[in-house]
Image (tube, rainbow, N blue to C red; front, side, top):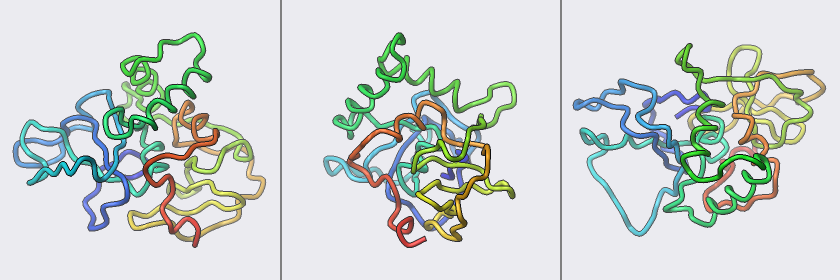
Length: 205
C-alpha cells in the first residue's frame, strides 16, 4: 500500500500489516478501495497466527505497508487486538485532541474516515498546511505528485522498498498534506509504538 492509500503489487512487503475489510473479489482482484471504515495497522506477527493463502474469498484483504508512518498517511490507526498498548496510548492522545468527542473505536473510525476519504470524489482527501509546522513522520505531496516523508531538514521520496532521493525541506510555504489532520497531531506527540514507525532507509536517505 502506498501513502496515498493505493494498493500495489510488489515484491516488497514492508514492516507492518493492516486491513480495511474485504477489497477483493472471489478471484483475488482488488475491486473496491475499502470494505469497512475500520482501517487498522497491525504487527506482522502476533500469537503465531498465520493464514494462507492470502486473498481468500469473502475475508479481509491483507495489506502491507512500508512502516507505520506510511499506514498513518493512508489513514489507518493502531489495531486494538494485536497492539493493545499502542491502541490505548492512541486513544489517550485522541482524547486530548478531540476533547468533546466520543473515543470508542467506532467514533474514532468515523472521524478518521471523514478526514481521509472524499466520498463525493471517491479518492483520498488532502489538506494544506505550513510545511514548517509538520512533525517528522507526516507525508506531503511533492511538486510532481509523489509522496514524500517529512523528516528533520529533509523530505524523502517514498518507494515500496524504502526512502530515497532526499531534498532540503527549507521554507517552502504551504504543502499538500497526505496524512489526515488528527493523525498528524498524533505523530507530533512522543510515541514508542510496537511496530516500526519509520523504515530503516529513512535514516540513510
